[in-house]
Length: 363
Image (tube, rainbow, N blue to C red; front, side, top):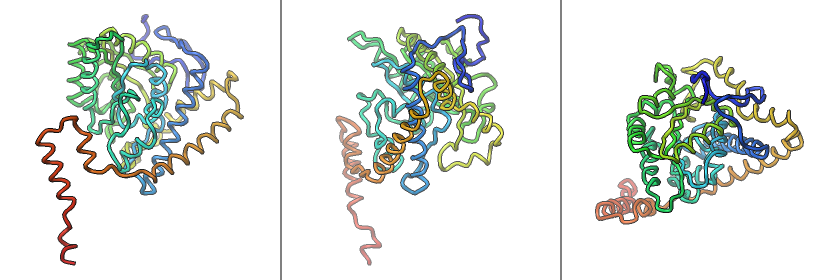
């Protein structure tokens, strides 16, 4: 990987949309893939806009904004192989959309209409894990099982977690297991600079990717607002992981909005840094690059805007038409063979729900 400064994030597209070279990695995709990445980012952002608006209108209980973090998600989608499995956070809506998870299935979770409803096998996207930092262990367990796949098809697990989650014990345990067992897994630590109200400087005195060295695996830092660089780094990392060599990738980005719609970022961070990061917007940089090369034009963008408006209307309609999951189905979908304990809890829950409240009895 050359003698480049390892602390410098890999970058192949500047914030102004200019292609640059990096001795460590190169873009191997074509022009069609670049246009696809822009479309994916713009659909992901529109879903995010609609989700935040639906929450403000009382249609959702909560929404975790992804504004500004679409770049690494588009890069990951471009790099994944047909057998790779993703274990992501609840902020990877754009990636989930690219992998075939429907807006309805994502919205149902935040509306309280059901748990993760999508087919993980068909989408290769594991259910959201709301508990911070718990899912890297799930990814490593899956990867250890994948290494024993009798059909011999090489595939990897990818786990995505935030800079705040990197301080959780589960994440570090997952790294221990992955390194010791040679599990085919890539750890993607999304450093968006803020663990809710805590800056990354309170999480670690060193770059987060350097933590990989203590576990005996390689670590690298990439510009997470650069989808080309992320795709190139992830392509390398996933290929290495498929040979039983885990990797840690730190994707540098910035959470432009709130941690969730219940958060007020103005209480703990200045507008100066936010304005600075706004100039590194992943959509604007790729759009500028494609316009400059004549791969898209204003007519193309106007047609896409019309598509996005239709998509936004569908998202709003879909959200309001969501039906609640019957409580018995929540129990029935938990385990194939529930056993006596879960069956008893199911019966108790249904019995409690069927009981007329005391205040109604006396009315």
